Amino acid sequence: MIRNSLAGFLFILVFASITRAQESSAEFKIVGYYPLTEAMKADVEKVRFDQVTHMDLAFVNPDSSGDFPQDFDALEPFIREAHKNNVKVLYSIGGGAYQGPYHELLKEKNRATLIENLVAKVLEHNVDGVDVDLEAGFAFGAETDPNYGPFVIELAEALREHNKLITTALPTAPGDVVTHEVLSQYDFINIMVYDQTGPWNPKRRGSHSTYGHALDALDYYHRELNIPENKLILGIPFYGHGFGPDLTSPVIGWMTYKEMVSSYAGAEWVDHWHLPNGYIMYYNGIRTVKNKTKLAKKRAGGVMVWQLLYDKRGPKSLLRAINEAAY
Image (cartoon, rainbow, N blue to C red; front, side, top):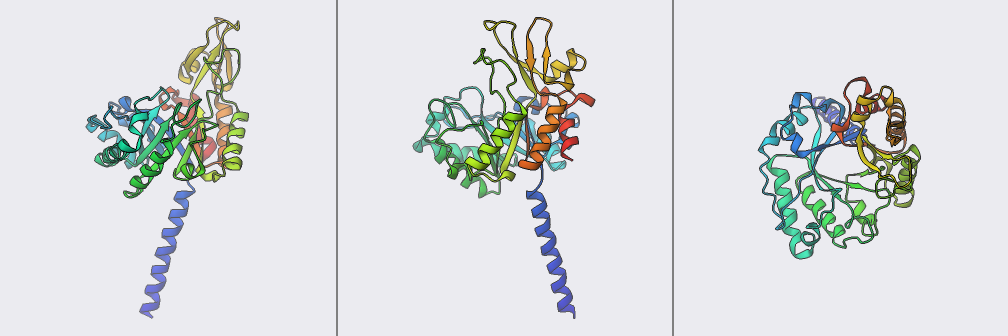
């Protein structure tokens, strides 16, 4: 009788453990990029850890020898508070600016040292993994780095030895070096569904991140690249690009959502705004962000935000809108 009771008790424990694991894997992710330097001096009580599941610290990059000499002791309060709120923290490497030194560091003769140093940096302050944000010249662009794939595969293996995550930020159309084998290494993929136009294309006036762009990106990654929907994280911008009254007018390359709604009453409810100087600023307002979040609930594993400090707190907050739509 005791033996049967014990067996039943053990079965319940195992079942509960499996259920928790399934719930965890099915969790709707809200991934927020947060500037590294700001995290190091943040008042952690004011950081909205309660509204995200993952924080990606942008950016953590090595020197030319592949070392990470930065003293990250100042990150301890941020990481500790994140973990207290069950939020995972990742170091994001690379960034939107061209990261030329990585071409040499990713070569076979240097790759093992880079990976060893990066994993050591992860373990030093017990962060939860690495987000690979190597963009133009690596994962996409006119030329891509053939060492991108081997680097990702070897880094994933090294991180998993310590039960750490590996994620990535990729555009709507990655390059040929981002093979299915490479994509399968990632625990999830942050799709940068923004910057579909901008200062580099002044004649292509309009929104750089529409609901249609989101649909197309999810279709492409799931149907063409065969990535499971729960590994796809839909990127949402908290900023806009502005196009002038004439085709020859220089494009306003950047205006944060916070700046928009702080300057113009009602701007939070639309996706473009006519500025006093004749420019039109294109961005995502509350309605579109909620609709994209609802799309991600059906067709993806979560949403990603670039970046959290561009948001407006209070009732106009896009992060708040995401949470309202997600939960």
